[in-house]
Length: 314
Image (cartoon, rainbow, N blue to C red; front, side, top):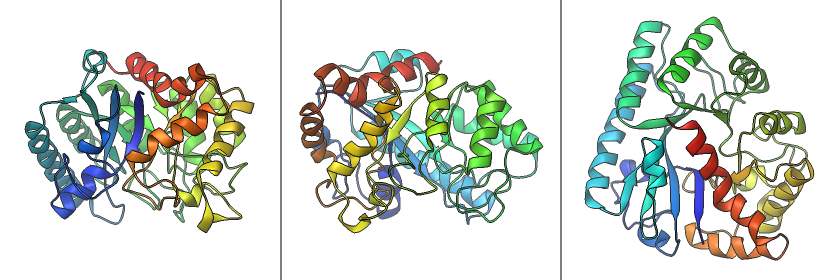
């Protein structure tokens, strides 16, 4: 089987706990993903929104330095910085896309922000989640007391991101920011890497039907996540694979066959008991096949994300 995962926090875990990407005790490792035919993994560097901009940026640079050292140890990992890198992935190789989760490195200085964004782009970052749960100098997350939308400074940052060719992830964005970014960008290079349906599980981190339909209208992408807090409102402690299927089913009812992907949030979330790691993906895939056609399941697990990135990565 093929697998394209829009979000995991494994690099953060490996860096902070001094473990190797090849083999570790986390949810994702190169060794544990060897059973895939084609595998493309987005690896997020998580930046805590309580950090000051300088501290946050230095942490990002140190994480990227660690990332590069890990890639040198593993010849079968292709660092995907452009379309042709993703196209080059064959059986036995892993496509690795570097992402940033949270932009707490931003300041109130537009020229400094652009300089930092340019440096991160040159380092290989191709996707950025605008915010995490709290407040930053520019963007606010779902749990922020500010709940601002897109400010003048925020528009400047969005322009910088788009000019560089970086994709915008609206996971963690509050509703005001979500709609403002969609309107301002006209949906260009915007996706949601790890969020579920708010109709199925009433959590502010999940998407409303209107938000999902907007993503669909721009031929964009939503990654269904395994974080149990976003799977079930009524039975959070005992959330399971069936709840994942409930979210997928609802998005399919909204006509999202070409817009659903997987955004596991491995190594950054609390997982259901029946989903333990990347080793569980085959079981999840088989569960999907019992409900849906092989063509649809392959689209959800690989093809939709693959097509989106080929279209939107320069």
